[in-house]
Amino acid sequence: MEFADEYTHEIQNCLPTKEVEDLYEYELQGCECEINCEIDNCACLQRSGTFYNYNDVLELRNYSVSEKNVRGPTYECNENCKCKEKICGNRLVQFGPRKSLEVRPCEDPAKGLGLFTTDEINEGNFICEYAGEIITELEASKRFRSNGEQNKMNYVFCINENFGERTSKTFIDPTYYGNIGRYINHSCEPNCKLLVIRVNDTMPILGVFADQNIEEKTEITYDYGDAEKSTEGTTSHRKICHCNSKNCRKYLPFNINLT
Ligand SMILES: C[S@@+](CC[C@H](N)C(=O)[O-])C[C@H]1O[C@@H](n2cnc3c(N)ncnc32)[C@H](O)[C@@H]1O
Image 1 (cartoon, rainbow, N blue to C red):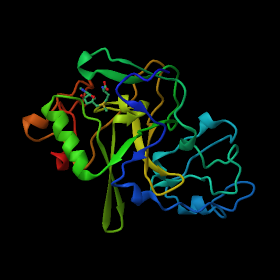
Image 2: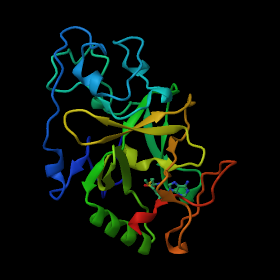
Image 3: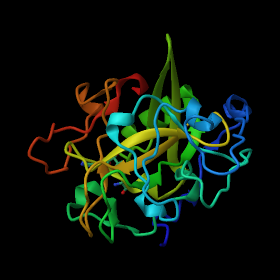
């Protein structure tokens, strides 16, 4: 698949900028499992709040995660683990995006480009990571405002994670360095959801997963909104939503803290 934007450098995984790279220095320990990773013995699974469901370890496309299981980040087995990479059931996002994806213009030109699937996707399957530069909140805010002023598209996404009393925020921006995840548009009735995964270190990886069975040739979408994001606000930050769904909220959600 060709990368659609000649001004963006393609990357496979997130790229922390100098200002934040120290945050992810800490490597995660591996497990000692020599055969199958099971909850009773695998250090990575014991650390995880969310697990992958899989039927056949050799059929990666059957890996899925069910919403009922979401209780915290998933820790995949990693390069420090003793388990076998090819057959371990606790590895998914680290193998990269699914193959059957294409970037093309949406029917409604107001949405620009979008990400589409060329084959059917089962509910729960992994689509791709939302990869970009990891930047500071200050830089995120600067870029968000500048995009708004120049009427450009916004790619900055904020991950909020709660660790007890503390909320950790991670700002991902695929404007200049990104992967195909940057072409996923918002829908108020989306077919995908987002989950946070960790692999080799503490850097959060934002994974896009199918939230329902998706037919071939369908546009991949998720809801840009969460508790901290608003469709309200001053008109300068509001963009009209063209998702065309029955329950459309009329405006794209945006992070009020970045304005
Ligand atoms: C992450 S980018 C998505 C890819 C983008 N369409 C492109 O051509 O590169 C987010 C931007 O896409 C546009 N967009 C995404 N979802 C939209 C929607 N439902 N209605 C209108 N514009 C949308 C907005 O301009 C938004 O700032």
